[in-house]
Image 1 (cartoon, rainbow, N blue to C red):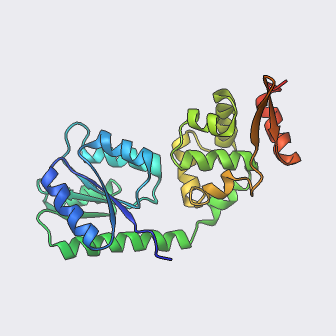
Image 2: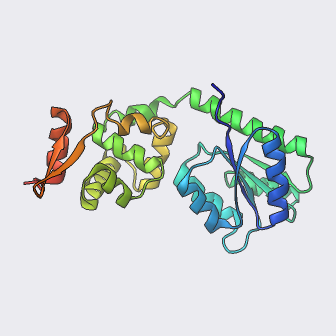
Length: 248
């Protein structure tokens, strides 16, 4: 079966440049998403996390530097981000971009073959890093309960608290309680840091397996105005506490 192509998100306010880069990348076998500014880029990442981001430094509204920091908070260090610029082309600009956390810095105009080579190199670095998962990240996650791991995986996959509450059939307040426990156990101060640990441990990649609870996900059936949860005893035990007997 053919491998799903890697998706590259191109963020640039110049529509002609976006079309140009999309043509180059698609010809090389990549899937492409595009955004004209930081706000639309973050919205695109919220819908589906790309494998790599080509990010213009000079954007309307939030600068590329600000967008990079936001992407790192949301997606962790595992997402390759390459700065692209036709204005900030001096050596100190490139150095500053790399120090801020970009994986690479490409100056316009560039040779199409060079761009493809840099994209492939950054993706290969990500794959190599994923193959050598930091053991401390896995050790930290070992302290979480199965439900907490499931919740963290959903956050790492880009779900909001409201979406998770609906998906797991629990209240937003229960989601908040679980997240408080997760932060305490992981020894971090905010959700972004917890999600970064999840990405280092590849928890987001296994989200579908976690969300299915090994094929024993709960099923909700409404009968005569009451909600019954059907599943294995272990699932029922976890859900009964979260729903606080709301089905009775």
